[in-house]
Amino acid sequence: MYNINKVREDFPILQREVYGKPLVYLDNAATTQKPLCVLDAMREEYLNVNANVHRGVHYLSQQATDLHEAAREKVRQFINARKTEEIVFTRGTTEAINLVASSFCESQMQPGDEVLVTDMEHHSNIVSWQLQAMKRGIVVKHIPITDDGRLVCCHNTTTDGSVCCDGIATYLTERTRLVSIAHVSNVLGTINPVKDIIREAHAHGIPVLVDGAQSAPHMKIDVQDLDCDFFAFSGHKMYGPTGIGVLYGKEDWLEKLPPYQGGGEMIDKVTWERTTFERLPFKFEAGTPDYVATHGLATAIDYMERIGLDNIEAHEQELTCYCMEQLQTIDGMHIYGPLSPLGTVPSVKDAVVSFNVGNIHHLDMGTLLDRLGIAVRTGHHCAQPLMDRLGISGTVRASFALYNTKEEIDTLVAGIRRVAQMF
Ligand code: 7TS
Image 1 (tube, rainbow, N blue to C red):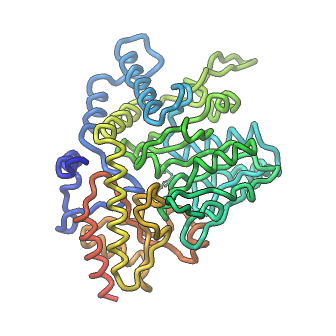
Image 2: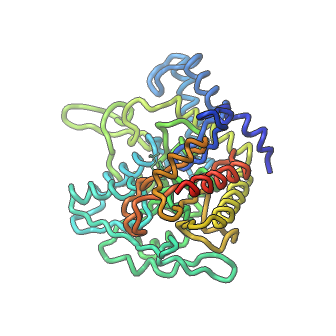
Image 3: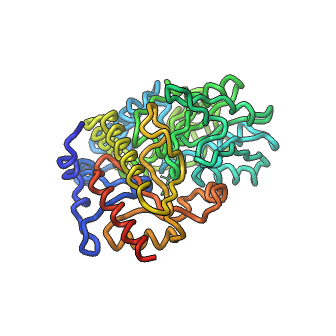
């Protein structure tokens, strides 16, 4: 395990006070804070290297290009992709999913063909497909969830605690062309057994996109082991800068898909008669990339790897279990998502705890906790269909990162008790 006090020194913002109270930052599923090494690396690049990439013969441009392409290699290693050609830089998870939705539907789907998502998706994995439904007449279907926030087809827990997936076939039809599914729910923290789902979808010849926005920050990702066809994640949720994310795609699939946007960087040759496109991954990277952000992301990955992905996961699992235990001692507490078995291996819940207390509105709870220095998220968390399914308008959500402590959870729990007494 790592020295949490030392780690917290890497994030000066954690020393801030708000309303005269020490900041307790528990909104990490929205975005994480950035360590000094990431800020320093980006400042250093703007100070001493800055030049556009892939274009210039001059020294700075080559140096910037080297940093940018080294970042791609770092990402490749981080998720264990076969090749850097399979790593496409995007603005974030949202753009990565929109890219696949647009290019996959254009080239692989006919009106009436289906994409299968779930009831626990973030809007980015719903609306991207709905836009294609409007444009191209595809159909968006969704796998329901149980009352405790697991996919209905995957909620059987075996005696060794593992989750077996026995039912996704029920939702596949002869028109299903793609399954697109969150690895970890940003509201419920549910860890979906994506490896089993991918195996089963593949048995029916159907590719799978995994939305890894909430998993990549918390667990070791191995896209070859998962065997997913696409994997999307955002840099800013894993200690990197905003505005940068990644789409991993198997080379065969990326070769098959048409470009998403047109412009510089993505072409081979342009004439009025016929334009040809660059090789992978540049075909999908039109325009000047955020090359300083890619370097920042690579530095964030280095930082996480120095601490150790296993250590991060163990620490956050401990925080999640502790938070669940402590919250359940509060009268009127309702926690959404898997409640039990807590602490099973493999775990079914990760780093996100959503709740409501009695009839207290989530916005009131969040606003009053804020006055105590505690930053949580309230509302629908960009998952309105999930809120409808749960029959609520929103939740209070606490979400953890590698720098959070049990003491902060104690502060949260004391804060909730104090707020609850006011009602
Ligand atoms: N998918 C999931 C599961 C997410 O949690 C989010 C962001 C996204 C996609 C979109 O990521 P972006 O980086 O492109 O915006 N989730 C949240 C959240 O829970 N609170 O704020 C953003």
